Length: 189
Image (tube, rainbow, N blue to C red; front, side):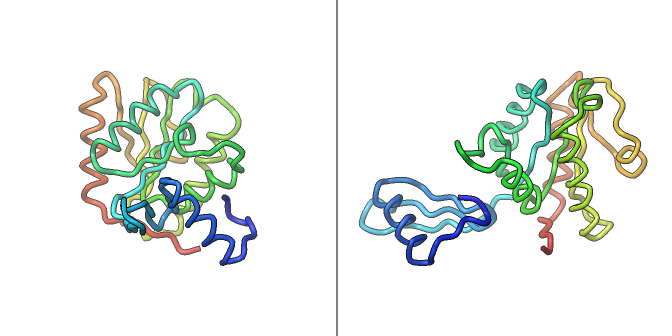
């Protein structure tokens, strides 16, 4: 379901109950997860892990998935369209919602992404709008470079980026140090 779907509270409760009774887990972005407890009820796990939105272009999907796996192993809750979007879901709205509810955004700059028009550029612009709503001393956007590409001036003028090349692990450890020191950011609607 996406924002804007109209369900009565009774219908929504019925959908969730039916899914849980069939052994499914229900994740509500920004809130937590309902899962069957193996008896006749369910367990609610409130959101505990910080969320990281990974912005990338299709040509860099392998590196984006590598980042996703690395963030997950480090205890974060990464968001990547290839892993989080459901069939039939309104992806532009889901991406906007994910950007708004994420604690951090990691845009992946590469020779492909800096010259390509489309979704990636829109995501970065929206992430910058979201970043403008948080206190100046808090970190929300953590740009990374996947290769020797120029980082857009609007970003490189005001924030430091991290190189994930030639050694991914060294660069990723640097990103983790920043994210683990920073408290979660919660944007006001």
